[in-house]
Length: 487
Figure 1 (cartoon, rainbow, N blue to C red):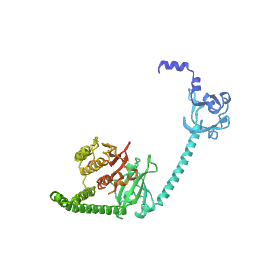
Figure 2 (figure 1 turned 30 degrees about the vertical axis):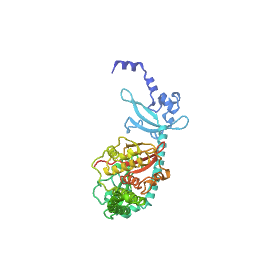
Figure 3 (figure 1 turned 90 degrees about the horizontal axis):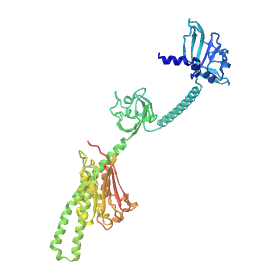
Figure 4 (figure 1 turned 120 degrees about the horizontal axis):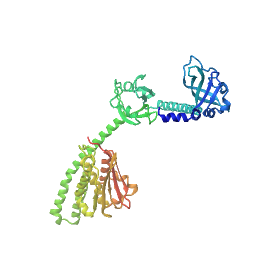
């Protein structure tokens, strides 16, 4: 041992050490008479050394040692560590203790007394009791919540079940039992899907991480298709089970299939009719122009006006049929293999509309826009209608038009901003319907199909289109689309 440590121990009396340790300590002789009592023992029990020394240790009313003291028992090995008991404080209250006891021997090994070191754990006992009470109360609340949830699930018409982390079903409501055989102690993949192994698309691991997972699954035995919502249970944080709630969507899917088929047939009908009606318009316009060129000078004013009306009406019908053809093909085109340069497509549309830009002396600014995975013809139709709309109705009041695009984590947004007369608030919903036109469009040519095409492109792409007021006046058309991942 280091000599400095020896010197320190020699200069630091044992009595001082015993009086400063944070543990109650007393010594007794072989008659169990207290012969030493330290300061911590006085703090814990309330008895001073003068009151304790010379007393039989039984004055502390220790429990259970007052009934059977094993300190000097030859059958009890020493030392004894971590015992629990209690003393009676001087003021009469009971103090909970943990203690260690051992025998004191002289140099010849003869027992000359005993030593007991103890710590007050009364406060810990109180906290433990309070905590146990809180835990028991919370456990009762959770049981009530579980009982309430299970009662609700049992009364649902939608099949529902709960399974643990080993896939075993711990609860199934009546609706689930009506479509499955006796569940017993089976796993979900055995009882519901008649499989011998876990389903390849099983979401259990995701759910136990706190995620909510949506699925569509079909049952081979019934032929029904269900939409299933898998949720963490009983809590979103650190769940132990998975709650699966199913809804039969077989009829909905069939209705959707029929509606899609009807839409395809309607689009095909519109396409066919538009094509068939457009065919005779070409010679009609041609003959009207021939009459005007060859015989215009021989006709009176009424005759020339009639030819002009024939041409204008035929051209208008041709534009309408062209717009109907575009509207009918939306949603029928295949997706491209990779993202397309949206900025370049918008610039090409602007070149296509150069005559209108010059006519209205417009100043169109196209910013850098995010690339998207949409058919090029749809993107062209989208910007052609939005830019054409802005040039026709907004550029005469203020020639500035801005085209921009922004990318977000799950979607992209395109905006075409003009500073014209704007659109009345009550008209902002209806102008996206076919053949609907705003009040400010009166006196200008148009078919009422352009914005309906924009709305349909957004809708079939899983997005949305709407119009807002431009700050300071004008209309801001917005198309919001989900991000489509590359194949």
